[in-house]
Image (cartoon, rainbow, N blue to C red; front, top):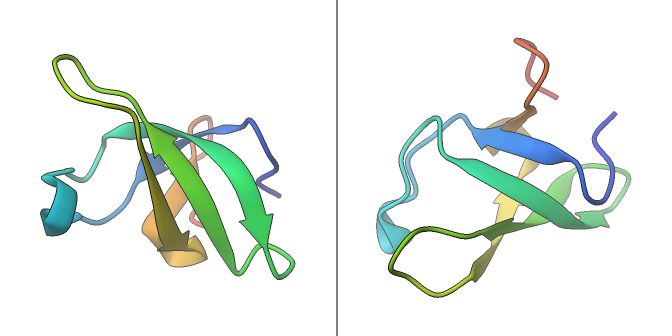
Length: 67
């Protein structure tokens, strides 16, 4: 189960923010029993961005399985 402050990997591209599959983020909030998450992304040369994502758009960084 993914919880707050876990590191996650994107499983889909997020074109609105130019994020690509495989980008790393940190969970800052869990929604409705892990149906969705607020994920913080920090990239070089850009501001910190927090994005709302569905559970199927991320996976735990140490797992090959999607949650």
